[in-house]
Length: 287
Image (cartoon, rainbow, N blue to C red; front, side):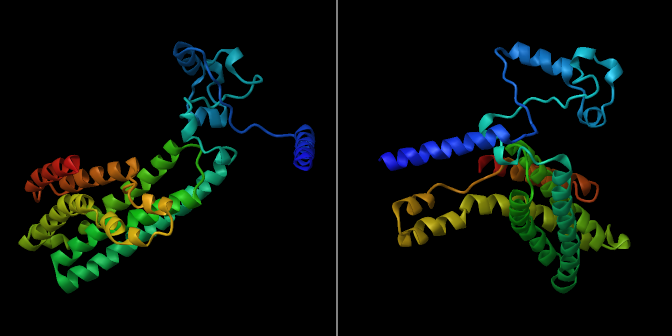
């Protein structure tokens, strides 16, 4: 026992030596307040916006005591909950985050372009049903890839920032993969034909019904709970199969905005799509 106590004391001594010699630069500062009123007063006095804080603009409109060291406009915002902060990524600077998110956004654009070509090929080969099914399947599968990219490639200060980044990419992909892709693959002279209207109808029907039905049936969880769990090596592993499917606010909100955008985009050609969208919203709420 004495051996371990001595080792712990030596480790603490070494750690304290490193802390005393290191010159750590603060990247984020969290301030706690005794009352909510004090917090609101601080935010009202110091908040100037992201762009003024980045370029030290608007100092003439601020009280001198609110300008850090007489020259720096601080970027002040309400902090997230402590359990939502990614403490290991707090020191990642703005340029690195912009670079990471730019890479994932370029990948998202490439996915949209690839989906347009694939959808056009299916429309020529199988007709409106094939392209509508492709759109619905990619709206389910591609977000899994985007979620993996956002969670592994990008560094964020908090879970809120991570979900917002995921929401923007999912919204961009799903909007383009539903309404915009139909606009590009349909010839301008054929927009008022029965074939084009049926294609819009097929996409709206698949979009409003396919995703809620898959979420209701939840085949992945059913397979895990009925078959895969029987071969779990530990009780903990078996319990994991019964926790349910993880869900993310960014994905749900992006899915709902996509459905509404699709119905509004083609509302002149297919007004009944608004009623189908309303029915799909009711089904999503029920699920």
